[in-house]
Image 1 (cartoon, rainbow, N blue to C red):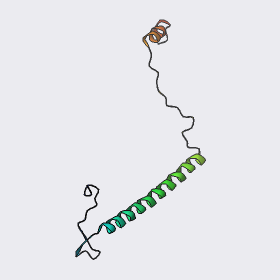
Image 2 (tube, rainbow, N blue to C red; image 1 turned 90 degrees about the vertical axis):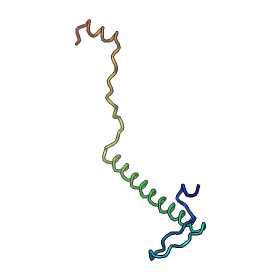
Image 3 (cartoon, rainbow, N blue to C red; image 1 turned 30 degrees about the horizontal axis):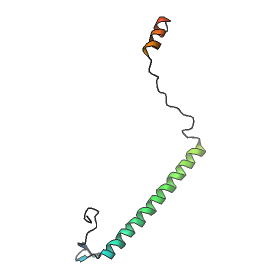
Image 4 (tube, rainbow, N blue to C red; image 1 turned 180 degrees about the vertical axis):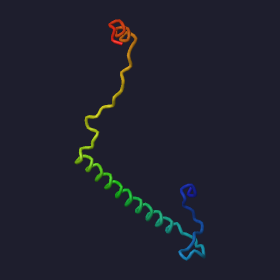
Length: 89
């Protein structure tokens, strides 16, 4: 099950790139925590950027407020008949 998540107790390459070393479960947990902290920091930067973009849209007047989709209403047979009979083709 741990292998599915990418966490294994196998050897990894050292910083020098030559000798593999065994990674203890504690080291694996520390590596996972470090990755999660980096990802959280990245997500916080993205949220701040999106917030700034949204604020710029509001200030610049480029919002979706008041916009409605132009969807065509489907005409019923009765409405079609009335339109045809009144020569509104």
